[in-house]
Image (cartoon, rainbow, N blue to C red; front, side, top):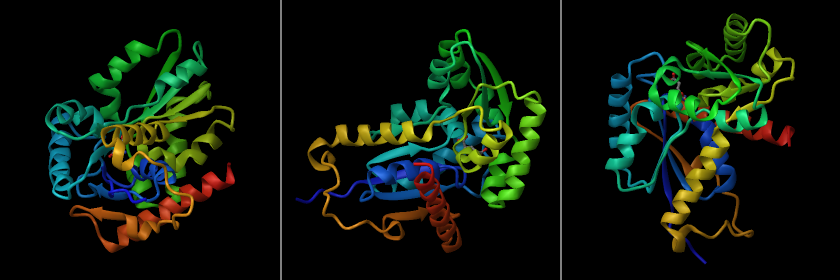
Length: 274
Ligand code: DGL
């Protein structure tokens, strides 16, 4: 039994979208993934909506040139800026990402929920609408995190952990949060520093798994006869070195190596924590 190959385009300002790639790869290791990290224009979160819209437009143009069958904006900020317009214009599934506020409120309907995200995500209409729809009786603590995505992209864990501590100590000095929403795909990489700040007492809500699931659902329902079947148990394990390609001006061999290292790190973390 053979399936036609599925090629997914994944876009983020930097390495953050690897958190969505990781969740997708675990479920569909044999798909092909083109990852566009817009390192030239990162970070997105401190820029204007129009600027980010322009960067996303250029990145999407490049990805479309590679014959992708679905586009994942693995970035909350890019989603705020561009998803609505892309969905109208493109004839392929476009999956966006938003802070996982809804499940956090469902779990803590009258609690304090910290939402860590970029300034752009927190200020734009998409998140304001989401708040209006789902916050209910919960107290939402908005925590803008300038500098954190950059620190994750630079890849020095101590620097990133310091940045987390500084941002949380400023916005939630009394550790009031009952739960924390990771409203930026980069923050998956600093989850242990966030857990550490809250002394392991506040569960984290990360949108990357839900985004991966929606991506898979949409791809498989748009091409049911060719990609609907799960991976065959006898299929050899796919090598991410082969199935993942970095594209765009920032796609250097060094970044590819770093991306594979970061994916490995996420897979290791998942194995350790079950
Ligand atoms: N990873 C992005 C997000 O999910 C944004 C990081 C940035 O470039 O500021 O919002």
